[in-house]
Amino acid sequence: MAATKRRASRPGPISSNSSTSTKVWLFSLFLTLQYGAQPLISKRFTRREVIVTSSVLACEVVKVVCAFILMAKDGTLKRLYKEWTLIGSLTASGLPAAIYALQNSLLQISYRNLDSLTFSMLNQTKLFFTALFTYIILGQKQTIQQIGALFLLIIAAILLSIGEGSSKASSTDNPDAIVFYGIVPLLVASVLSGLASALCQWATQVKKHASYLMTVEMSIIGSLCLLASAYKSPDGTAIRQHGFFYGWTPLTLIPVTVNAVGGILVGLVTSYAGGVRKGFVIVSALLVTALLQFAFDGKPPSPYCLVAFPLVISSTSIYQKYPYLSKKKE
Image (cartoon, rainbow, N blue to C red; front, top):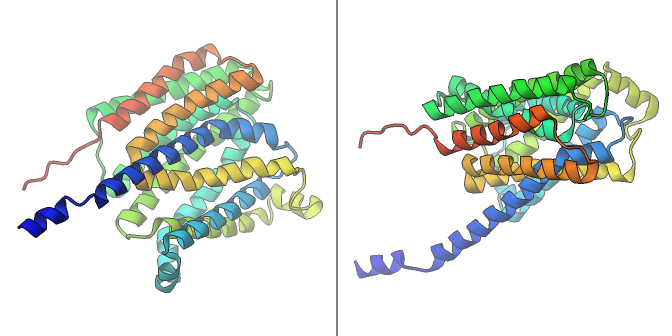
């Protein structure tokens, strides 16, 4: 009994918890800055001539490199290499990778046709689709508060759509271009994000697939899918005619690298702190986006954005604060 008490009172776990808490705050801070600044960075440092497929593929390469570094650092690279199988990889990562590849292309198109704040706020609709697909695929239920929060989110998305249709705060003055090349691609990307997120959750929780390994697999498979689809696409033709790095400047590497690191940070925040902290990070990122857009572009948000802004914040906060708790009989 005495030995048991001594083991229970060792200071090791306290130090470990303190270290983990520090990592959580650092990763959360970096992800908040990345997520909030990404739309502005992409619009400012990516020329319109840059081929979307080239920037997406470059982002995936950087993401793979980061994931390999992390696996080598935590000592799981050799073990995962020995346990890896092609069938297991395709089962866990194949479909989500293809979906994310298409989603990333749609996001790149949307970046160029929406103002930064509207992009970040409208992008929150992926929370609704994530909840929908996690219920369909995993049977994860929602509380009444969460359902109410999702309705608030839908109202905010409608307000933002109306605001974008009459606003000139974006990079184009054509309302049709704003809708069809900004809002529609972003909403489709949100649907795909929800589906892919649910599939990834199924792979990690049900299939017990390693997170970093899944990042590598999805990046490689997604890149192969993107290359295959680009063969006869306008992007593929443009790459063959002008070259892979057409329109690139040294500054183009900034949004590509920041976006790739953000993908790694999402996994780290979720791994260390769970979805609740990730939700607060997303809310905080909206404030970062608003501040950066006003500071660097001098564009105050439209009246519709001002109305939708508290709706997005409150709905996201409520959704994260009142999760469904299953009643288990002991």
